[in-house]
Image (cartoon, rainbow, N blue to C red; front, top):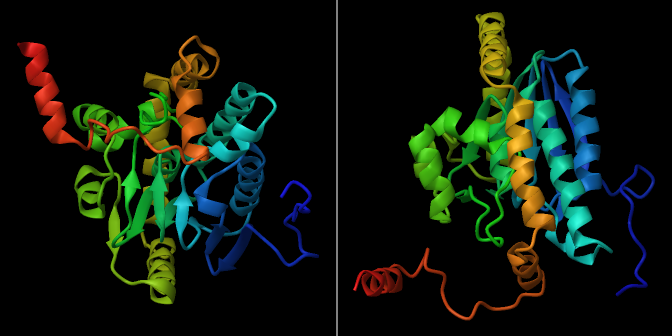
Amino acid sequence: MKNLPEIVPDETTGYRDIWYEQEGAVGYLYFTFYNGAMSSEQCERLRQAYIHAGKQNTRVIVLMGGEDFWSNGMHLNQIEAAESAADESWGNINAMDNLALEIINTNSHLTVAALQGNAGAGGVFLARATDEVWARKGVILNPHYKDMGNLFGSEYWTYLLPRYTGAENAERIIQARLPMGISEALSLGLVNEVIAEKGDAYINAVKKRAADMAGMSDFSVRLADKNKRRMTDEHQKPLQAYRDHELEKMQLNFYGFDPSYHIARYNFVNKVVKSRTPLTIAVHRRTAEHIRKII
């Protein structure tokens, strides 16, 4: 397996994992990363593609992701294979943060995350960095990190999650460690709209909605309101402060004395089966153990 050549995405090979299309006043940015994992290099290439999209004569940018996955956050397989897993983890989360920051600070366009496939961990919050999240009916979200060795997580989730779901719901979501269906995500504000269509019909539905958004008579007003809200939020607490807090916690996950993240990542990559069902799922055992602690 080590002797297999690496296929580098470029125009000569015909293989692309990132590409941009434009229709009228809408730009569509596709990224089809294997299993939704995003390495440091992929994050940076996507960030550059996003910057390119923002320079075009358009009004709306739609982040399309891929058919099977939108994003599942950091590339744990590449991290596991790196010479220093801690260093690669640090580089990867900073690359994710740089991409999220670019999206949050977009002041020239309205932005949309169109989820045709599932999203997990940092991928959920990367999607929520946009102005609107549209998701196909049946998509599953995993908006938490803690099952990966009690990983704290970043991608500005401490700013984005309370902003859209409220502080109480944000805490419950992060602690629950459970998959979330699209109806619940809609009710909590993680998703703005659910699209019932599948396949090509889904793509067409997204394009219709995006064209309508770009053609709104009050587009300029909405864009101005968005930028005013961002400026107000920044004045109250700068994005850098959220990032510093998150990365302080992540640095302990990567370089601290507790090896839980590294063990959990190794087990995940190498498909090591858990010795028993986690308490977050095994409610019956959680109740029994809770009773024993009280006694």
